[in-house]
Length: 94
Image (cartoon, rainbow, N blue to C red; front, side):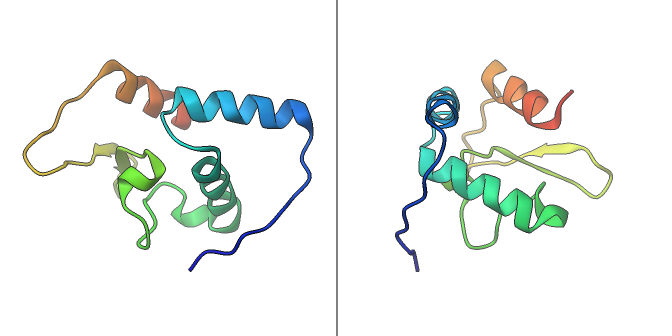
């Protein structure tokens, strides 16, 4: 179930968020959801929410118990791109 809401945000922040969403091939909505989940559920921030598929967040990996990123597979069509690797590096600050 979704709830529609209106919030007032600084213009510059929204502009930066829209650019980030475009760069990540996702939507502003999904970016906000991801951010809220990271704040509300910090222990599970490295794994994809059970209620959403990896594609819903543009997330292509999860962190295993040892702390290593593990790429998500999509059936038999797994292709690792520089964008995926750079996205993981950026998100993990490495």
